[in-house]
Image (cartoon, rainbow, N blue to C red; front, side, top):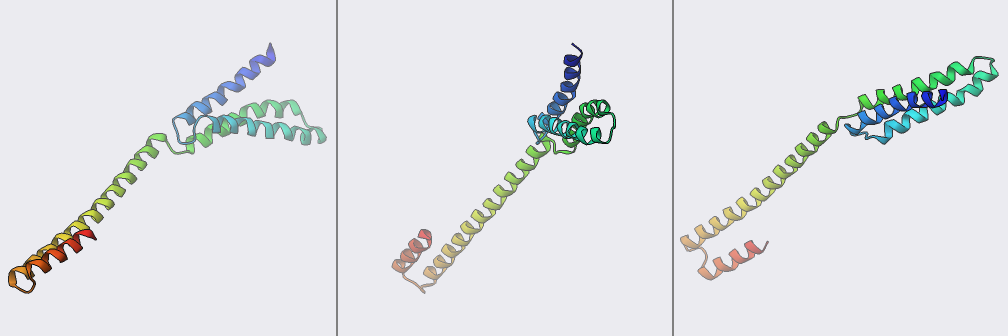
Length: 141
């Protein structure tokens, strides 16, 4: 019963780290797994502590504390999901504005060219047939 209680006490901050990560770009599983990996690394260091005749029980319980809190710290430093979505919307808007500027420049330059051709036709520099041929050629490009 005592080991189950300790396991539940350990899983609660691991779950909390994952819950915090769910609202961030990092997600639920990365902090949850980080807490296990850090705890496992500390438990592995118990072998080194055992060779030095140090108390392994303290290190074992310390691993249950340090793992989840490292994961919580990493999670809190990760980018919020709302911020990431906001940045994505800004980028989409900027790309749309850039596309509209290109489209507008192309339409303005075609309109300018048609106006120039019309001026040439009205001044008598080109015939109606030449005007129509040049207009078709301009609109095809």
